[in-house]
Image 1 (cartoon, rainbow, N blue to C red):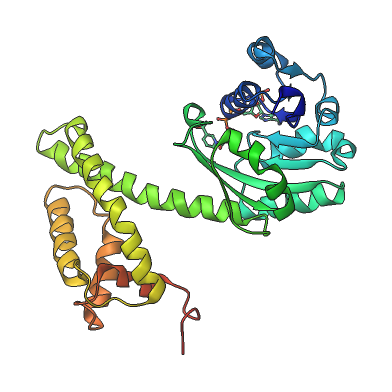
Image 2 (tube, protein in one colour):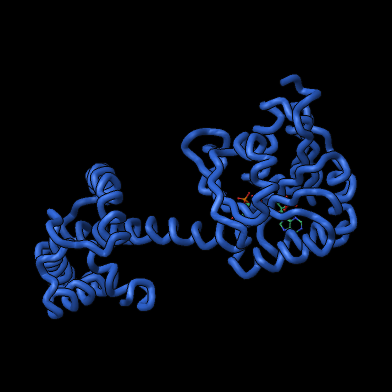
Length: 296
Ligand SMILES: NC(=O)c1ccc[n+]([C@@H]2O[C@H](COP(=O)([O-])OP(=O)(O)OC[C@H]3O[C@@H](n4cnc5c(N)ncnc54)[C@H](OP(=O)(O)O)[C@@H]3O)[C@@H](O)[C@H]2O)c1
């Protein structure tokens, strides 16, 4: 496709993510119009071939697809609000970090101004935009997602989670939650090893190697939790309970607060007390899942 045939794209917000995103559209040959509150941040992009818009309304007039990697929901309202009439007929892709409720509010607000709305959560860093390493989660207008999938995938591989505009943010938090638990575990272990004079730098490669193995274990956990079938797993509640008890005891002996693993210890103790010690570790899900999801 020649540059002339490529969809014109507007990028509102040229912070760290916005600059990387606009550069990706320029590099992919899209006519790219950019706007930023602090206009000078567009200089390098203009040198690369982007067009600088003086106002948000002018930027949104440039094409049907408006991508907004602004700071937060408030900045989207503040930037786009005064030019809301220019939203009519456009698709607004909000990439600012929002709560699910804020995403739903923005979707309703955009619909009120005649725009289709997609909410996006960026699982990426500025350096992993337009690489296979980053990925973006979307929800909101299915038609907008299908129509603009090629453009969305200029930024990152795109995953769609349904018409509820808040769904991308819910899934974003779920993925972040998985990572936070691992990263906090790392910091706990670094504190524990510091007592033995071992620096965090020594732990990092060992932990990274272990986490790679743990990641490969996720599909099995998912299969067991999804089916509610926990028999015959290789890693049982009892086995992990012993390890977590040892970890908490070692932490306490060394004066490291067992705050990270205490809740897991309590869950494993409960499963064992209820007679499920031989079940797979994944059966902890039974204590966390919504109670009405699989009741008879
Ligand atoms: N950086 C990351 O690694 C990363 C990764 C994933 C997701 N995110 C998310 O991506 C979003 C953007 O992050 P970022 O790192 O690119 O942020 P950033 O570098 O701080 O840039 C923020 C952008 O928002 C603009 N802005 C802030 N308040 C505004 C307002 N009231 N009106 C108009 N424009 C306003 C800024 O304009 P000025 O230039 O005029 O200040 C700038 O263009 C955030 O929601 C962040 O959580 C970031």
